[in-house]
Image (cartoon, rainbow, N blue to C red; front, side, top):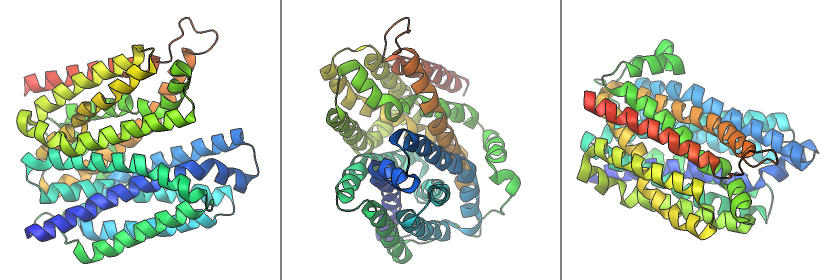
Length: 403
């Protein structure tokens, strides 16, 4: 593949991931009003439905991450990505016109399936990138999520002020436009030499996990990846509640602080991950990043000043090196014909973290902020996350020592 074609293909992949993240953020501000309009219920009832919609989305990612990844190992990355973008565009249009909550729920189920193409996108990057550079490029994926985390809600809020359904039409247009772009610039990377027959026994999440965990040195990486995901999802799970309870922040301040986190994360993934991995290697970069996570999470768990929390927030970007470093370590261990399967397993583990972390962290927050709490500690979830990262660090160091 020529340098120009590779750059265009990489641009398409990164746009796909960014659009996926923006699409989630676009509809986030309007979901309460949309659910209320189709159910005729109250805000509290809408919140329950919102939780069900979010959970169904994550469950589909868990179930279909390995399936989509394995399909891409069999039929190629290009058709899987282009078909998924087309279905995603149709799905957003359905959400825009859905007259009932059940159709909206079905649309979120389909959206969760199409979002499972994250595994195919990361497998494509692994296909076109030498092993020593994969960590840096996986960092670009994190940067794309950071951009979407900031831009999506902002754009969605502005469009919703025009029309409640406008964010869905915008998300559909973005997905469709990117599909057209990909049609012209995306070459196939799966060859006859790397193509692998599709096996349902390996494509289901548990079968794929068993197969991938047999690769040398990968099992500890997968465990660390899961612990990391549960710990770091503490931010979206409880940040708004934490800011209000600890510092008395209003919704504007919560939004600004989340934007600071998103910008810091995106900049860190784009500009710091590559140099850190090149300087220290994947193992040591992950090691140092875990220490940063432990210190920043503990700091947020203990601070009582909103200013101090805002000072700590950009430092968390240094810990963002852990995920791409672990991805690169796992990718090195996987053969060329199993990159899609591996990335599907990582996507499933991330979905498990997205399901588990909000339940766990909000329960801890509630326990330590209720009137009957033995100690008032809104930062308790961050302290728990810090403790989890200590376990993650111990596993990572032990695995490195044995290797």
